[in-house]
Length: 83
Image 1 (cartoon, one colour):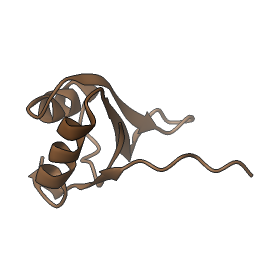
Image 2 (cartoon, helix red, strand yellow):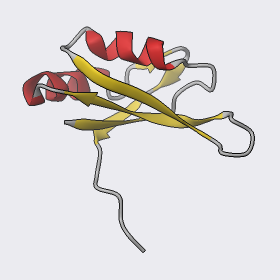
Image 3 (spheres, rainbow, N blue to C red):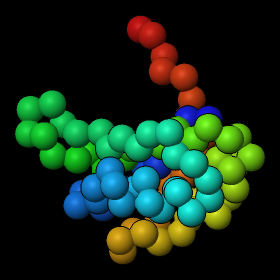
Image 4 (cartoon, rainbow, N blue to C red):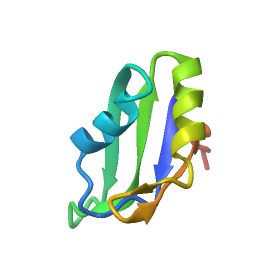
């Protein structure tokens, strides 16, 4: 399952995100989205977990939870719309 993680601190590293979600199950990948020009974090990212039950547990536990001083917005990622 692909999970959207918003309201991340701009200093959050992908490894920290992987460790946070790793408490709930195996993390296949963790990506923080960066601005193309400045390479600065945009404050959100995506975590992919192999097990849907573990992913749902992580969403439930972490949504609204504070991480690095900010309340996270965590939910199942939606498919990207094509324009």
